[in-house]
Image (cartoon, rainbow, N blue to C red; front, side, top):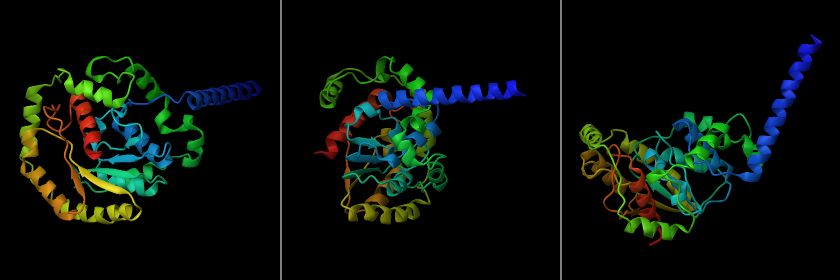
Length: 295
């Protein structure tokens, strides 16, 4: 029995020491995390980033998986992208309401405004450890889980369209990308199949109810002096003209006539499935969004 107790204590002490070393290393290093094992891990890390409020972002993007494709290093440093896979802008706005952060500007993706707030996810973001403690001890955040760190380190060596942005200012990088001849390689048969499937979808019946629920959220932000802008991520041209997309845009314009709808002028963008932008196109769209909102 004594030897079992001694072994258990050794294991506990070793584990505590390893956690302390890992936490200290993360606090000192603060590596950028940009790859996650799955959508749930990504969503939790993004929500946590907003709720902790570190860095006090000037601009916050709320939206769906369409915006997840935008790499952080292709957005201005004072922007925070909390687009959430499988959800819509309503969930991001609810997170923003719960956070202490009040940005100067909120960009609301209008592509998926029919999606209601995911209250189950909001409860999940609370996590087992208080946010105040995670703010002081970043090693215990969902974002800095070892698997996320390992994937991001490995991903830093990727080349081609998925490579990290080279050192230098974002404006120069955007100009270089705009003038480059690089293009995305996509599977045309996959795009055609997915477009054919999506183009026949009717206007979402829950759209009016979802938009009505968003009105007080947006009015509350405006009352606090936050500038709210709407924008649409580019998708396949055929889908942009489809009845579902047109109905959503018309309903959004009718519900929020006083909000500016930002138009992205990127041109020649490719998608991987009709909806989600391919890597180079996602970077071009990010540059176009940053130009558009500041114009």
